[in-house]
Image 1 (spheres, rainbow, N blue to C red):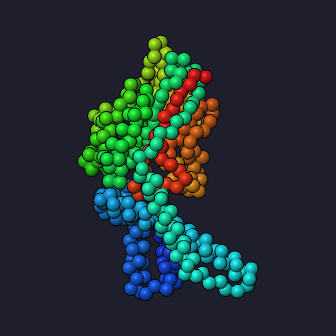
Image 2 (cartoon, rainbow, N blue to C red):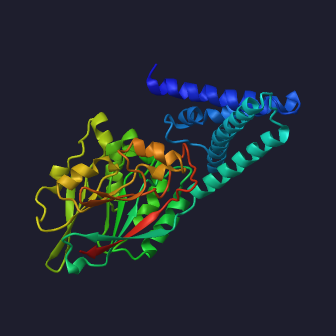
Length: 377
């Protein structure tokens, strides 16, 4: 049994012990109510298992959208309820030690934390599935020609087009992106969850993305979970230029701006080309600043060593929930959300435009479409 499997099992046992035995069972409800609620808790806690049964992959729940929304709300409620009940228990323990007498947690307190958990989860799901607003970011680029001063670059990332983020949502994103009046649109990976056959309709609106200098993109790790080669062909057919370890040059008069892209770290586990920044930059105009598209932010220091001026990444979803973002940062070399100055370059990590449907909640970490205003410096 792998470490991840053991961890999931321990979390599952803790959740059931806290929520069912320590929150639900002491409530003064009849057994005819408690048993169905307990069953519902167990069913909700196995959302990823049901997702795998629906499609063959935990990453692509093939349920109607209302069912996916309900599952995410239920999972979020269980998580917040478990944490709140543990807080209640700890508070009761401290008071009992100080007073040296038992402390009873009343029904009102249990219902209060239950209601708060349900409300927080509902807000989190609503935040996750909205079409995000445009966030404006100003970046000074070393060596940028005055010809490119004020150049507008719009980043989308982590769309995760699925039954949860379907064609209607994608159309809303495309409409807002096109209205942003960007010179260039880039997408930093994780377009989908599912096969081309499953997502063909959901991803179709991306063919309408339009900017003066086109739409450039790189793959994310989720593209590798399905048929990577087929997805690269399909995305290219939609009009997106996929930068798989290569670059393109944008010209204004005699000035140049290099946009380079690399494949994702996940490639090494799927028998396809691994990220190769050296190859991506080969043959570029040596006096032109480089904007790098890399789905994961962890290699920013290596990018700085190769002369990149600005790296745009995603992958982390910003951590999704305040507090949880600190844990996500630990798995991404400290990078999780927003702007970082790394070895003389600017790294920007998008919170993501969409979200993985297996845990679609956002609290304090809003989704975004990011419009960069490049300034000469």
